[in-house]
Length: 173
Image (tube, rainbow, N blue to C red; front, side, top):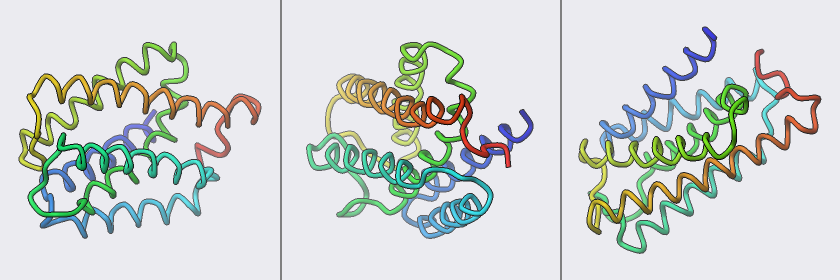
């Protein structure tokens, strides 16, 4: 449990660095993420193809949200700090899976949908993003997207567990 608390705290530090630091700290956020991934390559046997798939899905969803006017950012283009957030979230999901997989997928997806939507609402309050549509519309869209993202992550990382005797490979190294 101590290891999980450390991993969760590190995830939150990077989240705050990316959201509060926004464009000014985006290279620091990316440096933290790349360093985390580099250490994880040595310390875990994470399936990096699956990790990359989750990152790609998240970036495509947020890019689409931006293109459709749901999100507006301070500068033109898609923010590097948001890509860093997807990279660290996909990493965190790998370590979070063993804990949340004890609960029904529907409940985990609902809680994840709420938490994911709340993280964007917090980002909006901190000035990292502006919503281009009414608040409740954005909140519902984000909830639905995050519900589906969490369900997908449970399926992706659950596949590893089902095919490796019930455990993520070397997740505790």
